[in-house]
Amino acid sequence: MESDQKSIKFDCEDIEQNVHAFLDGKLNEAQKILFQEHLDYCLPCDKKIEFEKKLKEIIKLKAVETSYPDKLKAELKKIISKKNL
Image (cartoon, rainbow, N blue to C red):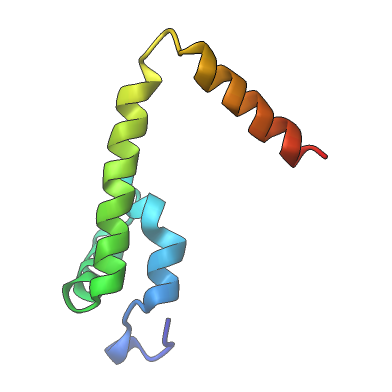
């Protein structure tokens, strides 16, 4: 972010760093305004936010499921074991 108070704007890096704070409602009013102003003209960042919103909704819905298919469990175990190598 630029240091001059008159021209403070969020850039794409600021959006990337604050995406979850924005979606969780943890930005102050000034930050929300700067965030939204950036999204109004930056299509890639706007698309990223839309993707993150949808992903968050899907995770929230899936997190309440109490049972998971055995195939999914096996795939997750395989992924985890590869990352631990």
